[in-house]
Length: 627
Image (cartoon, rainbow, N blue to C red; front, side):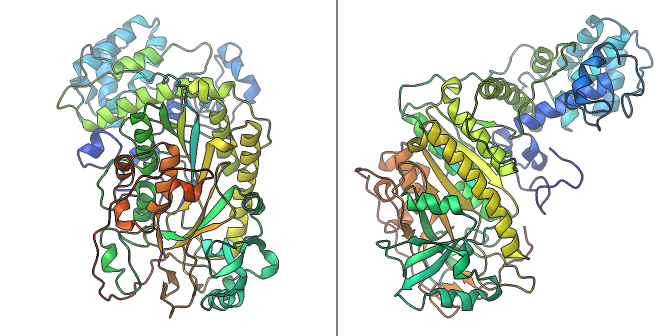
């Protein structure tokens, strides 16, 4: 999960406040490094260590080193290269002081690899001693003991672990497929804060306020997009300040989906605590930290600003609501461990978009899986919470890897996807949708992520490159899902943690801001319209913008998710209040299922919000490099 010079963004591989779902989060502790402990990363790490022990430092069978032989010749390690010392870049040379005494060997390795912690766990020590004694030769015994020890919670954590003598953890089994119609939400997160006022731009036919393309150009200055670069869309009937808007010229698939009636925009949406305006927003947003990547990423993932449903993301609560209705539901991420998919009752699987490895892939290797699972069996009360978390993740990674590997192995797509990171993610999601019967799900929430949108410099150049990748992935995905005849069953939701300042900085970039423009797409989406309220003025002396070019959102994320939740299966007021704990603060702004989707629906009522009192405040200065 980590490699020098390969950090995914300026905030490195994990956040200092990250808490693993389960015991760690319940205990109000943090586990930053656990953010990279996805199922694929755990399997890959195991394979890397197995390859290192057996074959030395090289690249075969998930090895951690550089290529020492051609990949097609890796099988020759079984015989032809078995005794070769020039087919690797180094090999482990440890030899125990007394290889004839298994207990001595395990205790010695415990001191070297776990600081003696493993020796204090009598159950684990006994299992390793037995494995050493029964492996065969001293060389085979030592090899097995090394591979098993690096799988233990003592190796991966620094606390004392007390393993039970008999209690095993439940293994993951695929849910039973119901006969209900399939539905999937695809949550796409553009990490960094997308400059969405260059995704959706006023074009012509502007009759409200001072809005026009010329006005937009005067405000954005060197960041503006000329009319000739934009693809125009008809917004008549959307109650917006302009009858025609322009879509960024590289987003041709977004443009065509809108024109086909399969995509709608939501204008000026953002994280909100309650209804507010330019005079009172600072004090009415006292439950969050505006403009900070990590905080606002969590807010968009959770949509729970008061933390009434702490520990569950918006996707996770959708999953739980579906399960409560009898659906088989779960979440799958193709990029890391996102908060958005954490639920109480559903599974959270992670898939590497580059493909899945099987555990211990060498055909001639010592069998390891059962022994690793024994070493990570349930722990006693008082045992390390972090060790318990590691062992639980090991079981989860094995179960989900078996389930998803088998599902993906036989899934094929008829569409050629771009060989880009985002294209690979969307291809994987398309395969997972195709394999929904093998996975036993009739409700899915998928998560994909594109980094790079923190455009403090050279915004237009970077945005054009990123949008090209986004467009390519969306184009291939929609084509494939239509081929699968699943387009009516899918809702794509584009998100980002915040918008960016309208006024550029000295580096031809834009800085952290607030409100932004986003879109929803799908076969049942009632598209070709813009929901929300695009500002009537982008000037700082207007009612919706404060210095330096920060747009105050007029639509909360709750508004959008309210209608999507109804489509996904949250059909009662109680369901919706659990999925969206703060929805009643925005009664007049909530979108219903009939606002977002085609068809006739009966929408559950909402409860009247508590009125708030306005008072003046001062405008903030947005952060340019805070987390």
